[in-house]
Amino acid sequence: MHALIVSGAPSSVALTADLTHTAEATLRDQGHDVDVLDLVRLGWHPAVRPGDYGIEDFTAPVGAHAVAAARSGTLDAEVRRHQELLRRADLLVLVFPLWWAGMPAILKGWVDRVLTQGFAYGLRDADGNPRKYGDGAFTGKRGLVVTTAGDRAEAFGPRGVNGHIEDLLFPINHGIFWYTGIEPLPPLTLLGVDSPVWAGVEDARAQVRKRFENIDTDEPLPYRRLLDDYDGRRRLLDEHAPGRSDLAIHRRP
Image 1: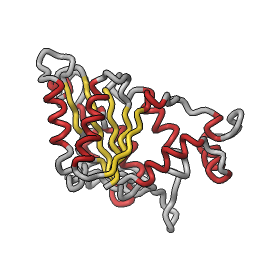
Image 2: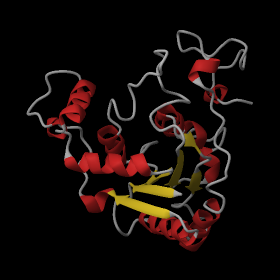
Image 3: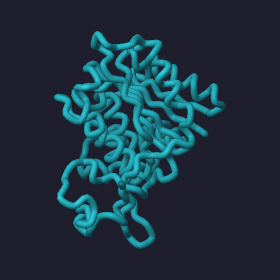
Image 4: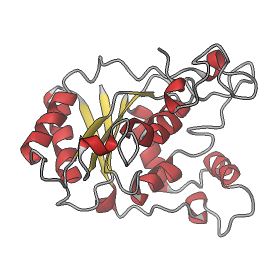
């Protein structure tokens, strides 16, 4: 298996930087090939800019510029390099601290700049159907989130003040991974790292090593497929989870 780890660790001394190294070492010890993108070390710019597409200013929707740049060979060289790493990966691992209920800007910016229209989305099948939510450019790949959060686990539970951690990660697991065809694996969420109950870095490393033990055979989250379970308005069919509107309705029972 070929894995691509993309680290949104804010510094070289951050816990998530340590866990990135642990994930890489664990995968290598298992015999997998691994590429690592340490975005801070790379000086990655998080914002989409006209220069990404070889132009001086935007004169059309960003996606249209991305498609045109890919066709003309003017897409930014570093973006192309990252796309090639993703193209050959079987497993995409995103490692980051949970900041303001989501990814740090540098990692969100990696998604914005690398997962361009025509490469990651905006595709159709032979019948003209949109390829997303279960089908897509990256069908056959698997994705895993490894994230840390300061507050204790109970605060991220079903009745926790921060919201359920599964709901907080829904935009990534469903809206990025599953949208592009990547099968999202159950995430590793290391919670309470700023609280008195935290077990420490050695325990966190052990949890990472444990999570990767069966990474190539683990069952993905059972999200529903767009073409099977939704109507023409992209609304979940009435026979599925009737009377409910929580995010869990988008998973098969």
